[in-house]
Length: 444
Image (cartoon, rainbow, N blue to C red; front, side, top):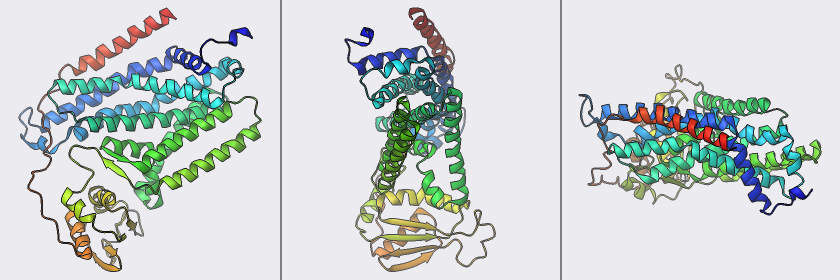
C-alpha cells in the first residue's frame, strides 16, 4: 500500500484531510450562513434597548448609567452563539466524525500507525477552528459597537469568548461520542440533542426543588455560559468542562477502534467514566474564581471583601426559604453568590417543606436565616446584602467598613441606534458565505 506512505507527518495529513471534509460539509456552511442573522437579531435588539435606556428617542436620560455593555450588549449578543452551539454545531460535528464510518474511510485511516485518540483530536481541533470561523459575526458586532463609540473592556470579551469555546467543546465531545457509539448519524443527532434537552430539564428541576439538584445545575452548559457571560470565571466549572470534554473525546476514540471487541470497548469506557466522576468530584472543591467584569458585578465592595478576608472560621448559614420564593432568588444572586467568593469556607443550607413556600408562611421559622460562626450563633430575617454583611460582621466582632469615597462604576451609556447592523448581518454576511462556499466547491 504505497499510497499510504506519506511524506507529511500522519497527524498533519489527518488535519488537512479533516479540514477538507469540513469544507465539503453542507451542515457547516448552513451553520456559517445562519449564525450571522442569529447574532444580528440579538445585537440589534440589545443595542436598541441599550440606546433607549441611555436616553435615545426622548426617554429618561441617565438611566443607562447603571448599565454595563457586558450585561446590556455582550450577554444577549453572544447568546446567539449558545443557540448555534446547541442546535447547529452538533450536526456539523456528527457529519465530520461519522462521515468516515459511513464512507469506509475509517478503515483506511486505521491502517496508519496512529492512535485513535489522535484521530479524534484532529477532528476536534478542526471543528473548533470551524466554530471560531463561524463565530466571526460576534467579532463584527464588537467592531460595530466600537464604531458607534461604545466602550469595550477586553477582559470581559475574552471571558465570554472563552466560555463559548468551552461550550462548543462540550457539544463537539458529546456529538463525537454519540457518533462513535451509534451506527447512524441521525441516531447520534437524537442522542446529542437528548443530552442538551436533559441539561435544560435539570435546570428546571433545580429551580423547583433546589438542594443537590441546584448544585448539579451549576455545571450544565447553560449555567456555565451564563457565568462567563457575566464576567465570572470559576475554576471548578472550568475544570468540570475540561474533564467532560476530555472524557467525551476519549469515549469517541475508544469506540472508533474497529478491531476491538464491544466488551473491551465497554470496559474501557467504564474506566473513563469512573475517572471522570473522580475528577469532577475533586474539582468541586476548587473555590478559586475571577471576576473580570469592569463593574465588579460578581463581587462585594472592596472594603467589605477586605474585612471578610480577616474571618478564618467557617461560616454556616441555614436559610428557611422555598426554592421559588423571590427572596431566596435575590439572596442567592445578589448576596450569597458574591459572599462565597470572599468566604471560601461558607456553607449554606436551604430548608423548606414545599417548592413554593406558599403554605409555609405561617411557620414560626419560615423566612429566617440562622448564622453559626465559630460557635457564635444568631438569626434574623434580613435578606439584603447589607443586612447579611452586618450580621456577619457583628458575629465576627468586626466594625462595619465605611463606604469608599469613589462613586463606583457608573456604566457607559450610549444613546446610538444600531446603524448599518441590519445590512451587515442580514445581507453582507450571508452573501459573503454563499459566494465563498460556491468558490470552494468550484475549486474542489
